[in-house]
Image (cartoon, rainbow, N blue to C red; front, side, top):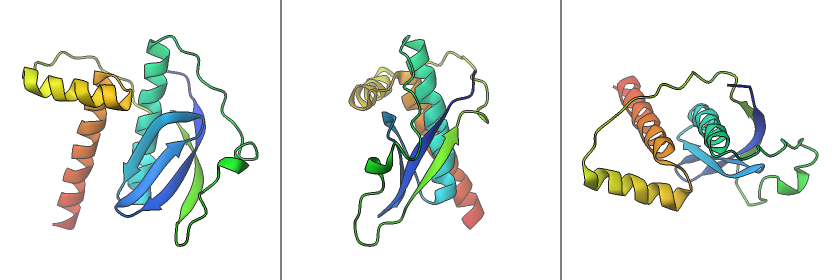
Length: 142
């Protein structure tokens, strides 16, 4: 996979940090701290780029910080926000596999995919990544 990088806006929210990409408005991530938000943002970016390419869509041009000045952090009292450039450079190669799941679970995955605009693979990858991060946090806090 070629390397792609986009500026991401990381904003503090009640339960952690949200990550958004102004050049890729439907690409979003979240983390309980900035390190997790950045890691999840890179994973979301990689998955988003892969989805766009699979669908034959052209990737939008990555704008510079100067071009995004009007998109900057929302001015609210007490909101922490920062710009970071996230890349697909450190992304691992994807592995294809077959998995059999109950129809009711797949119906939920399909519902989430339709609501988020992602495909099944992306919804499952984000859910698994989130679960792995939660497990890692639990081990570290024990």
